[in-house]
Image (cartoon, rainbow, N blue to C red):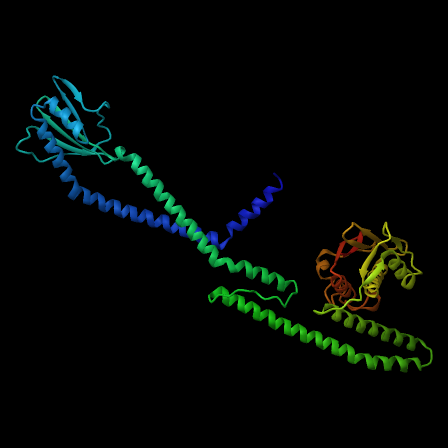
Amino acid sequence: MTTNTPIRRNWLARLRYSLSARLLALFVVIAIVLVLILSTAFGLAFQRQFRDSIQPHIVQYLEYVLRDIGDPPSLERAQALAQRLPIEIYLRGPGGDWSSSPRPLDLSPFHDWHAHRQRPWIRGKVQIADDERGRFLIHVRNGDNDIYLVSQGRDKRRHGGTWVGAGAISVLLLLLLLCYWVIRRLFQPIAIIQDGVRHIAAGDLAHRVQIKRRDELGDLAASINSMAGELEKMLEAKRQLLLAISHELRSPLTRAKVNTALLEQSSARSALEQDLKEMEVLLGELLESERLSGRHSVLNLQPVAVNALLDEVISEHFSNSQLTVGHCDEDLYLLLDPVRIKLLLKNLLDNALRYSPPEQPPSLKCQFDGKELQLLIQDQGPGIAAEHLPHLTDPFYRVDPARQRKTGGYGLGLYLCRVIAQAHGGTLTIDSTPGQGTVVTVTLP
């Protein structure tokens, strides 16, 4: 029950804000208003037409029936007429009451009593009335005798009217379903456009919205495709520029390192060598990230013993650090690019060590559930505010905008780690709580 409630609420919310539902509701409201207006107009027109043209004929018809009954009224003739014609006859007089219907005469529904002009063959006072069901009543007061003639109304045709009403409602429902189908058909490209926009927003700029229509939605899809194409060209030009600059800077950087090695040993030389090393790392990260983020990134995949790979990273880069390493429970072999996975772990462990207190070193854990490998790097540092977490793996993003040497590099390390994980078909996620530390999880298939 609890699992169905959110789904139902989401469905109701989507239905509430759906363009198709709104158009259908608008159509229903307009249809109801038109039906009310037309029914009122036709009702008034028919009522006037009925009173002016049809009612006199019905009244004359009842007068002919009254004439056949005779004066004084004959019960035999009245009985014969009631059996042959769709009328009810009621007689009241000193000799007793008689009716052709088992129902008693009820005058309360009848209204608009008015006297009718006299006929030469009718003696006494004549009154005419009608009711809401369309019945007419003629009352003749002749001395001590009262004669009532009641025509049949809509109640006698109720069964047929019910079928007509049911048929009309069925046709109306079919029309509503047809209108809803047409509206859904018209707005069907919106779902395709939404899916295409989601792909483009996720970074798949090569995706195109496949809609072949010549209306406004087709124009919108074409505009989105054009926008995606222009963005793809701009980002590709930016990528090529970064690659070109990185390649061009390698030669002067190499010459600068050679010339620095010729200088006498001093603090100035050490600082210069450190700066050149940072530039070399930055250029390397730029080139590596751009290679892996391209459409045709090439990995050197080979069977790798995961536990041995973790030990190699620790021995090569963190032999003097008090890291806690949790190996996998079994000798696990996966198809990985060992050089790039080592680079990923090195960058993540460097960050964890930078922000961890000396008495609480970070930990590296390995977990495998039979389908996916998870590498968890956890530190006990100050943590990261929630507003920074979605942007930590963006290129050149820094929590500390000062970009000081003591607080890290230039914001490419985590971006490169994410690119390496994605190139292997995996993901990189970061969870952090201020004051409690950070956990980085690398998931590889």
